[in-house]
Length: 253
Image 1 (cartoon, helix red, strand yellow):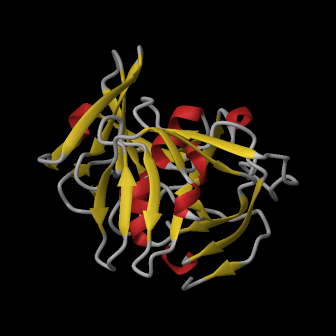
Image 2 (cartoon, one colour; image 1 turned 135 degrees about the vertical axis):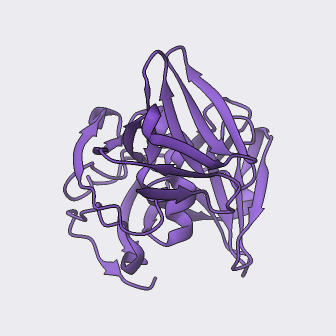
């Protein structure tokens, strides 16, 4: 049996085998909700149980599916297709080893321009102004481009909130201009603050305890001028993740 949870513990679940292996999805919806891209296993409803649901919220992301997230910490947890007796759950939210493998990449053509689903990232594009938004549009902002260096983080906190692993870029917070803003925040055990949309659950940004600020790369809508440059906290990465891009890896950040 697998057990999983969000970062704050307000949502927890259990699932019994057999499971579908992990699928990584690079569609724009999954990139916005997770902040990078989403990865999920799935199981039939009769083998899935919510052991804690006080923080669970649902957002209808399309006519054919809803997405479940934690309204308290913003963790991206579930994808429920209409008319199907199975549910997809974030592989990064599993507590302990999953014993699963990554079997496929979906919507690879929609991947962000700062990385490739497999292999080394492409050269940076040109971008003068970055436009970002959450999935539902309650949050919209601009900031000067280009995105520049993007760091992927595999720490347990980033895995829980993103549902896979996070990717973000550092910015001067004062340079962010909001056209629409409706954010919630969660204070992490280390004293940082994660911001997300309380309506759709999209991950938006992170303010570290030292005051530095970063934005999730997946919420940028236009060409970014960014490039994934490194992976940190790889000692904590999920067992189904295979890093094949040849970038530097830091086990502890």
